[in-house]
Amino acid sequence: MNLIPWDELREFDPAYWNETGSCILQKCAKELGVEEKNLTEIKAFKDKNNAAAGFIFCAGDRYRYFYETQGMEKDE
Image (cartoon, rainbow, N blue to C red; front, side):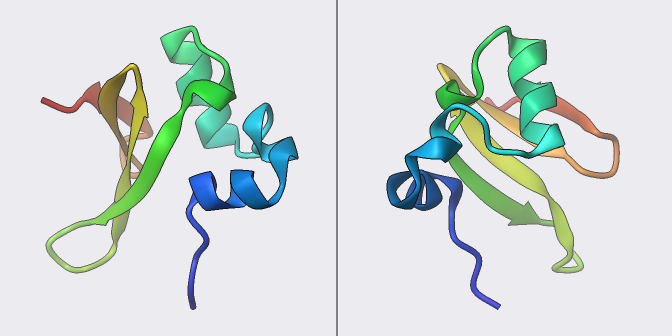
């Protein structure tokens, strides 16, 4: 299954710039005090067992969101 990166989806359908429909991205934007359109370069990452673990994104700085803890941290 091929997943379309958010940035490519936004190019295809500009409606995704302001509202992705993702409650996770909405939460990240709210916690950072930005609009969803400011979350860019969204890329998934996997854990050591090759299972989906979260995603990396930019919002000025680079961040990691972890599915297991439902939290994010600044990516150094």
